[in-house]
Each structure stands twice: as structure tokens, then as C-alpha cells.
Length: 404
Ligand SMILES: C[S@@+](CC[C@H](N)C(=O)[O-])C[C@H]1O[C@@H](n2cnc3c(N)ncnc32)[C@H](O)[C@@H]1O
Image 1 (cartoon, protein in one colour):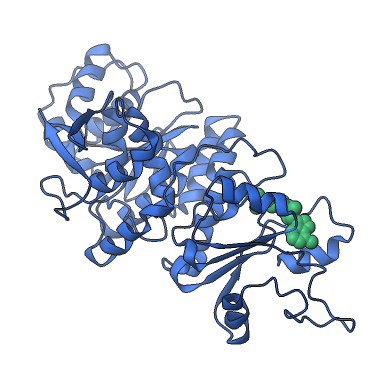
Image 2 (cartoon, helix red, strand yellow):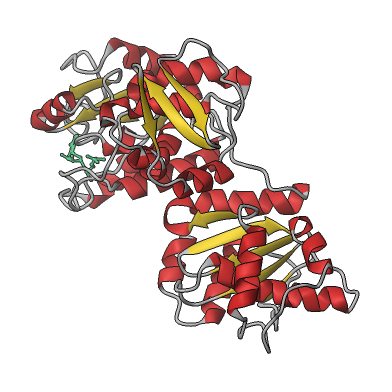
């Protein structure tokens, strides 16, 4: 069960703590006044999302101040967690400030004064990285794990395999905040944004450009300037991801721009089609299991692709074969320009091409594209990525074998 699902079922602060302990695989922890304590991290936890990260950090820093005053060791990282969000910061960013002992704390950590909250908020300002667990659960977990291992907060790299997922999150957090720009131009602005190290662009000839005006990001496209309505999403997004991408990936990523169409939950979702949040999760698990390059290394065949939701987050559609029972679904994919570079075709994978003695002979219908037949014959690495028709099948055994 995902961390987010568990948090939604949490009934108490203990449940929240336990959910995070499990998801982060924390070892050697204690629970007490400081909600969770390990050698590397202290956590402040809440069983509601009504407190801001600033308020939670103010409480946690009260304990840090007390520990400092007693001459005790403070761990390298501090985190605040609740049922919707989590945030992480390096203790080093706040220790010099606390040693000055200027904050007027309240009677106890939870009874913090407005003055303490204001002072702490002003100081920690942009030092912490925050994550919305519903959309960035995996990024949070991997950032904390990497922090424990490396002693630093390392941002997530943008790679060929997470490009599409990162783009969708960029659209939600940044794209939709850009004033007056057409959705069709999001991909161009996205590339201008990611291919930039904060000072210079990695490429001089991109159609759009990232500039800065009074310290705030501004996009230039087709002779027009576009500003952000709010910079908060921008700040949060770039606290999670690293830019620019590694040099070895840059050109490859730019070539994938044709496959980036902003994705909202599609109108034809329903129980029947695979929800995009599930697709997102499945891709994270595939990367975890098959490694960072699975979208390059594996040929994907979804023989129950419906309208193709399971493939829309794939960054390399040229490696995909998509077939499904209803020709109408293939037409929908064509009309919505879903995975244009993939091979999309009508095929009944349970009945087509089966010989009288139960063998498979692709020459019977000739529907399966030559490239896929060759890949199968040559024993290439093929990933059967499938959300099978579990509910409508006459024989569930058949389906689970095909799905497995
Ligand atoms: C659970 S849905 C998968 C939906 C798909 N991932 C999507 O998001 O659109 C199962 C799909 O398998 C298709 N299907 C059912 N029986 C099939 C068969 N024998 N051969 C190919 N496709 C089949 C259905 O039409 C349906 O589109």
C-alpha cells in the first residue's frame, strides 16, 4: 500500500508516524517528545494537514534549541510530516541562527508564539524542500533515503525515463501559473526551463528562453514575455528536481518533445480505463525494478491498450506496440494523438493467430507488425505492460496468465 493511501487511513498521530517509518524504512528510531528520532533525522508529525510546514518546523526547532542549550548533538536533517505533505531541511542551515538564541519561544513546543513563528519562517524561508505526498511520494522517499546515505539533500535527476512524469508535474506546478500562454506551448517552455542552470541555457537555439526579471523567472517565446502568477510552485518544483539534466541525456530529452502533451485526467477515464495516477505509480515501480533505462532497453507490448492510458507516460513511444480489441479505441488514440510514434493496431490477443492445435502463427491475421514479430523471434527484451480485462473475461485463469 502506498504511503499516501496509508496516510489517508490514519486515525491518529501514531498511525502517521508508523506510515512514514515504514515507507522510509527507518532503523533505530525512538518515539517521544520529538515525534520520531533517528541519528540522522528528527521528525515533527501531525495527524492533520491544517498546520503549515513553517508552524511544524517552529515546533521542531523549539526542541532543537533545547538540545543545543543542553549541549546535545543535533542530527544533520530535520523533517516535518503530516497526512498530506512533508518537508525536509538541513540542520546546518538553521544552527548558526539558533545559537544566537534570539527567538522568544512559547511555554512549550506546541504553544509557540506568533513572534517565534514569524522569526523562524523568515529565517528558514527557502531552506526546506517540501513535497505533496499525493503527487511526490516517491521523490520524497528517495530524497530522504539519499540524504541519510549521502549527508546531503540531493535533487531528483530528470532522465529519459521520468521525462513525461516530470513534465506532467511541471505543467501542474509551473505551466498553469504562466500567464497568457497556450497549453500547446508548455513543452517548449518546459524545455527552456529545464535546460538552464540558473545562469545560462545549455542550448543557444531553443525556441523558448528562460530569463530573469527582478530575480523572478520569465519565459520568452515568439518575441513575447510570459511571467508567473505565483512563484511558489516554481520554487517547490525546483527544490525537488535537479536542472539541467545530465549532459549525456540532454539531446535525447530534447528529441522526445513530440511526445509531451499535457495530461489532465482524461475525459474517458471511468473504471474501465487505467487512471493516470495508477500509471504514474506503475512507472515508478518499473523504474525501481528494471532500472533507470527501461524505456530505452525494453520493447513494450500492451495487447489490451484500450485508449492507451498505460503508455501515455512513456517517454519513448517509438519502442511501443499497442493493440486492443476494439477498432474504435484505436481510432480514439489516433484522434487524440496518443503515442503517435507507437505502432497502434486492432488485435484480439486471446483469439487471433491461434492455430487449430493451439500454436501461435502471426501469419494467420498478419495484424502484428513485422518489427514486433522480429523482436519476439530474436528474443529481444519485451515488456508486457498490461492492465488486463479482469472484469469482462469469461475465464479469469486465462487472463491472469496473459497478464502475468
Ligand atoms: C482494463 S482495460 C485497459 C485499459 C487501458 N490500459 C486504458 O487505459 O485504456 C482492458 C482493455 O482490454 C481490451 N480487451 C478485452 N479483451 C481483449 C482481447 N481479447 N484482446 C485485446 N484487447 C482486449 C478492452 O477492450 C479494454 O480496452
